Image (tube, rainbow, N blue to C red):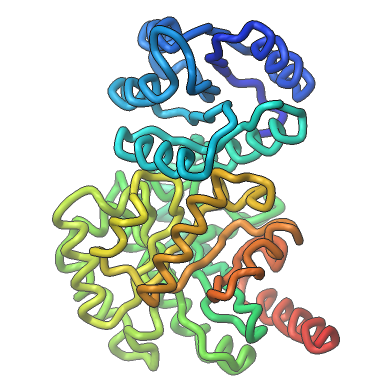
Length: 402
C-alpha cells in the first residue's frame, strides 16, 4: 500500500505551506496531488469529483471557508476517504475536532503539526494505509461454488491470534479467524477474499458454525498446552446481528461441549455493529446469555467514546489506524487516552490491536490501567499446532527475561 499513488488534496491558504507539502509528499512517492487555497474551492472540486480523493489535508484557519466548516461539509457529501488536520492544535482542540468529525461521519485519522517534516508525513500515510485496509477490495475473490467446495472438502480452518496480558505474561484471549486452506498457493486464503461473497450467498452462518465446531474440538488441547484461563473470541458479521435468534443458534452450537458462554467473546466491528435496533438487541441478548461482547476496530467508525457508556460491550479493541505510531501522534493519544479513562472506570477490557513495534508496545505499557496487546510484534495468526509452538517459545523467552 505504501508504494501505491492515490489522489491527495491539500487545502491551505499559504502558498509556502503548499510548496512544502508538495516537496514532502513527492519525497514519499506521492505525485497525484491537488492544491486548494481555501475550503470553498476544495469543496467544489470534491463535489465535482465524487469519491475521487483518497486523503485530504485540511488547515483550520482559512478565508471564505475554514477547516472545521469544510470537515462538516465533507460529512454532508458522505466523503469516504481520510482527513488529516494540518495545523498546530491544542489537545482540547484536537479532542473537539475528533468529536465534530465523528458526528459528521468524517474519518479524521490524524493531525499533522506545523512545521511539517518527512517523518511526520510518513507516519500519517502509514496510518491512512491502516485505515484504508478496511475498505480496500480483495485482490481475488472466491465465488460461492468455491466457498461451498472448500467447506465440503474440510478446507475451512481456524487460525488463532492471542491477546497478551504483559502484566501477568499470560494469554488473556485468543481470537478465532477464518482461513481457507489453498494447497499449492503458498498460504491460506484470508477472510477478505471470501466473507462478503459468503454473506451475499447465505453461507456466512455455515462458515461461522463450521469454524466454531472445529475450534471447540481444538479448545481442550489449547487449554491443556497454554494452561491460562483464556476466552475464545469469534468475529460475527453485521448481517448475522440482524437475526434476533442468532444468540440461540450459538447456544445450540456449544450445548454439547465443555465451552460455556462465559468462555466466548463475540467480536463485532465498529463500522457495522451499531446501525440498527435489531443489531443492538442481538448484542444485548448475547450479553444477557453471558457471552462477552467486543467492539472491534474502534477508530474506523463513528462511535463517540461517551456512547460506550450505554452499550453492552465487555471489551473494546483500538484499531491499528490509531495504534500505528501512537508514541509520536498527539491526535491518536488524545482519542486513546480518553478511551483508557472510560474503559478503566467501566471495567471494560481494552485491547490495542496491530502492535508491530517495540515503541508502540511501550506506549501502552506506561499506563496504570491494564491494556491487552495484540499484533505481529507477538505473532501473526496461526493454526493450532503453530500457535502452541509459538506459545512455548514465547513463554520461555518471558521466563528468561524475568
